[in-house]
Length: 247
Image 1 (cartoon, one colour):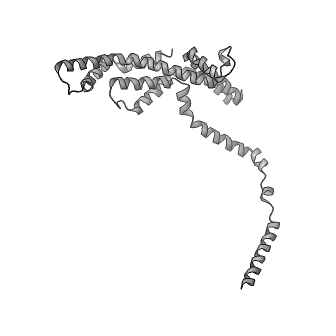
Image 2: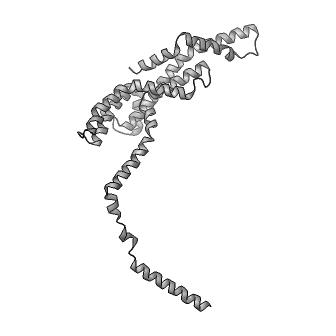
Image 3: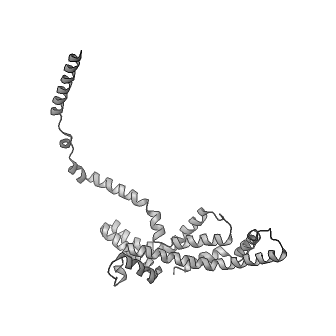
């Protein structure tokens, strides 16, 4: 029995060797260099890269546009009023996006005119279109960036001191622009908090003088803060102030 099994195993292995000799190696059948150099492979890689870049659109929207300042100010005014989740985050983000479109429309129009249209017409290459399209965005960010913030990242990037604005790398300009926007947004938020804090203090003093220690001043002052905000047409004033702050 054992001899019969051994002979069958040897016969099976010999047949496998014969078949392996008849079948060409896998590396001979697949030409990797030909696949990589084929147009289909290049198009597939470009498609993957394009899909990956689409996922970065929200990141660029926040980093290089006016969205950062606008959404922070809108969030701070909601906190100052004390209405918790009213308006909802979805409403604030939608309003911030539309206001960003108003602020950034001249920049995007310039990019479309000088970079996108010539590229679609075949007048310039893709690399040249990206180079030209980055110029209006850099001008916008430089206009809103403080020199102190820019000098900070230039120092830590360990690059030679830029002689002109065109010499500033984009990876230095973007974080400088972002912290400048954060500072500006918090400055505007501080000014927006002042009238609502006055109302809170006034209501708290009145309740204290009446001996109403168990009644929350926040609950009593909230209707008055909403009334004040409505009477002065607060949303219109905030939208106007944010739009004018980028001029």
